Amino acid sequence: MATGEISASSPQAAAQLPHHTVKTKKAGQRACNEKNEKGKFCGGHLKRWFYSEDVIEQACGDAEKAWGPDAEVYRCEHCQTLYLPNPEEAKVNVAGQGMISVFGLTLPPKHK
Image (cartoon, rainbow, N blue to C red; front, side):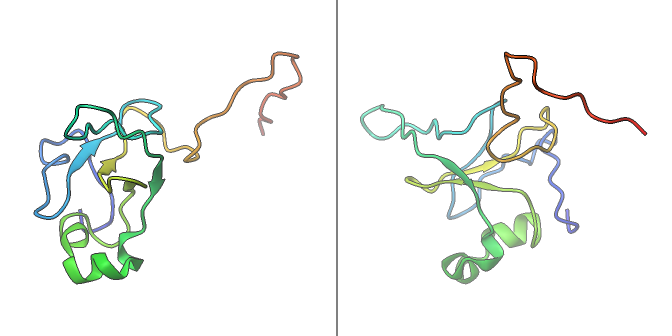
C-alpha cells in the first residue's frame, strides 16, 4: 500500500479511519449516497481528493497513514465522506466514460 495503490477488494479497503467516514463507490457512482440524520441522501458530487495537499488533512494525517501519499480517493463536496474507487471499474475519467454517438460518428480506436 505504500505505492499509493488501493486494493478495494481486500477486506481492509473500506476500513474506517478515526476522523473520516469511508465507503467504496458503486459502479458509475458520481454522487454521495450518505444519509443525514433525517434519512435523506446527501447527493453531493464526488470529487477527486488530493489529501496530501490538503492543509487540514496534513494536521490529521489519517488518509496518508492508511493509503500512502498518492492513492485515488474521492470526497463528497458537502458531507466530506470519503469514497474509494470501485474495483470492478477500469480507471477512467472522473466524469465517466461518456456516451457513444447515436449518429454513428464515433470513430473506432486505431490499431497499430
